[in-house]
Figure (cartoon, helix red, strand yellow):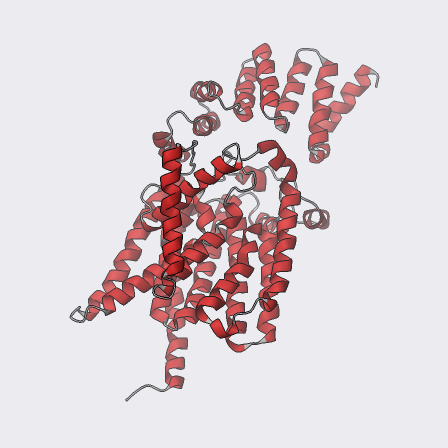
Length: 531
């Protein structure tokens, strides 16, 4: 007897809780150890978002400020609200913040499961694809870093927007359309990388709902996306002007990004060498030309044979569109990061699951149990790499030694290892790494500042003074160096210079005016100087 559609619907509803429980177990198993990770004070901005965030307390003044001002060079009010709620519950206990990240990743995997079911109409395939994505090692960085709450939260609202649009596309339900637009707005208030949603919706309809393919109903999404992009540009404008393009010019940066795109694709298929930090030099003309030709061939092949390989076309098109916001075509400090693949990797998981399932179904004599074992083995393989990588994040030294092995003399890597030793109290080792950083061509202000702190603590005030001044010369917006230099001048009896540099710090960061001790010091110096 053939099951009726109602019976299949009942079976589907009954199996969904089991599948979601399996996803929950997978995520908790892989990321449970990250609950032991503290806040990363160096290199990953957990200090900026939480431990040194003077706007973390949940009150009316801070909420008004976060929704009406740029903060820390960004506009992320929902992300800061989420962290403020964690602070209300957990204080500064990192356990709670990491728990929220894990739960958000599980929610995102669950939403992706429902999105995949809407595409494939097959629950088991949807579960396989969602589990692949949940277990994929490229997502480890986004989950274990508290500062990447913005990636997880934006991803959650992005998927809700996409899921509701799927409902609208299939049923023309106006309520689903409004809900999708609303969730899109929330996604941009968490992080701006979701601005590409309108183009992904066009791609989705082109691939799966060609008769409903329409540009007009994407106009509200485009307008919201443009507003989100404008806010991002406005919040980062001064930083972009100071940093410049990663490669120095647009052409060199584009050549570097071609290499990054290729390595992203390789990393999705074979995530065997993931790092906390990646660095790139200018490629040779031959290398750049060959990589560009290779990437152009891949894109051309995909577009030309889109009818023969529609699932592969959907994956590649989604991948490149989703990477546009992090493609460094505008100035940025980070050329490549695993967290940038959180949204682009979604359709890779779907495509790989489809390839595996279709291949197994094509082998007629294959034992039915093997059709279940093979997907489980692939999930296990990715999960094993992820679990191993999560363990490395438990020890920052082991983590950064991954990058040190590839870039043994890179100043950023050397500085981060020095900062870790500094935090652990081994100041001699810290100074050794800071000196190696300062010997490089990169003028890395934070290393000069940190080395200056060590010399100040050792009462070598003249050396500390020179290092703080060099830090400011390298990075004119390194606020702590102004404060440290002011305190050094105060120790040397140069009250006028001390006041001048502390005032410069408060001018650069008005939030310092809420530091009672610093304000009291400035008032005392003004009285002594007769100002």
